[in-house]
Length: 295
Image 1 (tube, rainbow, N blue to C red):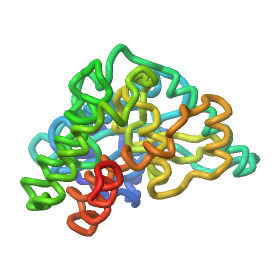
Image 2 (tube, helix red, strand yellow):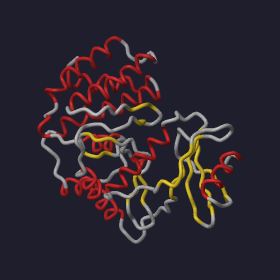
Image 3 (cartoon, helix red, strand yellow):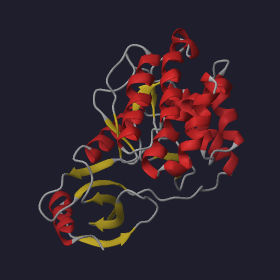
Image 4 (cartoon, one colour):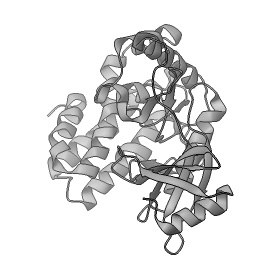
C-alpha cells in the first residue's frame, strides 16, 4: 500500500481522494504503485533513499522527450521531494499496455522509425543543462563541444572514479581504461557525429507498448550525444527485434563503422553495471577495453 504520508501528499496535489494503491513491480531502485483520483488512474514511484535530484531529473528528461514529439512518454503529473515521513515521489500518467490490433512486427517497425525521428532532434553541444542519473548512479552532463572529450570526461572517467572508490579498479583495469581514453580522438570521427537527443538508457526494460500498439519510453537518462549510444545499449541485453533495427536504419541510415564502435559505447553501460552490481561485470569491462587498446 502507498504510505500514509505519501497518500496525503498525493491527495493534496491532485485534489481528490486516493483510491487503490496497488504495488507495481519491475524496478529495483524505487517502490511503485498504481492508484486513482477522481476516476483517473496514475502511476507513482517513490523512495525514501532517492538522491534529492533524482526525480526532478527524471521529470525533466521525460518532458524533454515529450517536446520532441517523436516517441510517446508518460506525461509528468506531479513531483515532490522527501519531507518528514513522506518519501520523494514522481507521479506519471498511467499507461495501459498491449499491442491492440497491430502485429508485433508492425509495432517494432513503428518504434524503430520513431526512435530515428527522436535522434534527428539535435542540440548545440553534447550533454545537457543539468546532471541526471544512470540507474541510481550520478551521470554528469557538462556541456562539451567535442564528443570524444564528452565521452571521456563525462562518461568513462566518472565511472572509473566510482569504481576506484568501490575497490573495483585494479591496476590492469585502470591501465586499460586510461589507454582507451587517450585513444578516443582516434577512434571517433568528430566530423561525422552530431549531438542527438537520446533516451540514454535504452534497454528492453525501459519501454512499454501501449494499448494502441505504440512504444512508450520510460526511465530515461536523457542527454545529447552520439545516437549510436542508444543503439549500442539496445543491443546489449536484447529486447528489440530485427524489424526494429531495419526500420530504424531505413529511416535514418547509420554511419559506416558502427559495428566497430558498438562495443566502445557498450563499455559505458558495463562500467555502470560494474559499479551497480560488482565484480561479476569486471571481466567484461576488461575485455571491451582491451579490444581497442590491446592487452
